[in-house]
Length: 77
Figure 1 (spheres, rainbow, N blue to C red):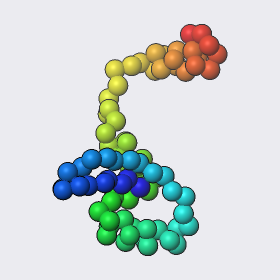
Figure 2: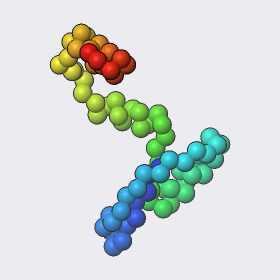
Figure 3: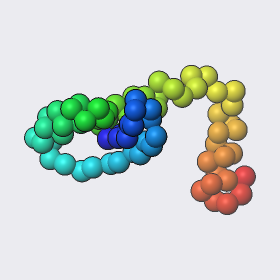
């Protein structure tokens, strides 16, 4: 859930908060957030947003990717 504190219609602070609630209570959280002027995102929506904003074509070969994987796994390329 993202919360924005507004004063005189100006955004002064924004903080992301992750809350683990029962799925059955999500409707009430969304209603409350809407009344407060907050936005609510779930993991699936955040994941979709991340994928939509990620690069679609990467200029790396499969070999270069595997070299990086090996470097992370084994400490050397």
